[in-house]
Length: 254
Ligand SMILES: NC(=O)c1ccc[n+]([C@@H]2O[C@H](COP(=O)([O-])OP(=O)(O)OC[C@H]3O[C@@H](n4cnc5c(N)ncnc54)[C@H](OP(=O)(O)O)[C@@H]3O)[C@@H](O)[C@H]2O)c1
Image 1 (spheres, rainbow, N blue to C red):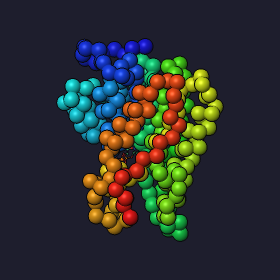
Image 2: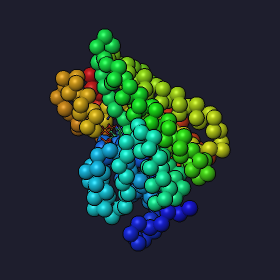
Image 3: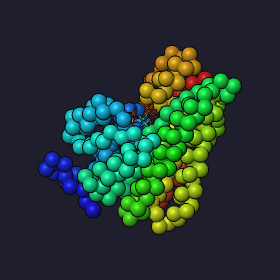
Image 4: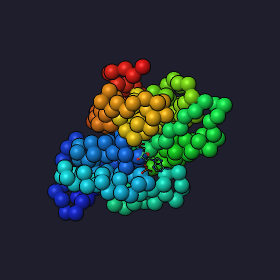
């Protein structure tokens, strides 16, 4: 189904025209950039996060560029939050054909000190929520032969010291993506894992603080770089499926 124009605007053009995307973690960082990039490519986007003010800024930034991004605040670790999100997306935009999981949280610390509540928090946001949201949206994504993108991390490939909890959730997220892809075969949506290294976002700024480094965003990838990669994966003809993409800053941080 082609989504209706928003506020009577002219129908969208662009290579993702006619597609409906749900983007989590869109109030900040990578998800924010992905929401704008997909809207610029013509997709009807429902962007979510918890921070209402940040979501309003996203909608405003989109409008400023002549784009329409709908926003819906949701706590994605809560079943009710996920259900309302899906209902809103279906009611406002129609069958969802793109799901980008960018919401995530990061905690670090040596295992001797790391708290179990940090582990639970990362499990809930980084793994359980995307799993459950994917379950809810699988009927739409299958009907539309759509795409699921999991924003993972290079920590999902190899775990650094003191990041065991975060890395474990990202390793598990990759396992879920791989299993789902194999399970769906050629009938279902394409499933892609993107594994970025350090990207200049609020999360990475906190990582720098925790590591006692001076914040150096220019030396890192920008959220728009990851968003551009998401778009190229989505724009590939359906005969091609990108399974995994590793990205890292060209300038190395020691
Ligand atoms: N930045 C990096 O260097 C880097 C590297 C590798 C991988 N990643 C991954 O990339 C993804 C995006 O990270 P980022 O750097 O863009 O981080 P960010 O700027 O901190 O954004 C995180 C997003 O997750 C959302 N979120 C967190 N908990 C949530 C919850 N319980 N319910 C709903 N939304 C929630 C936040 O929304 P609210 O604050 O509005 O709730 C925010 O929009 C994450 O999965 C992260 O692990 C980042």
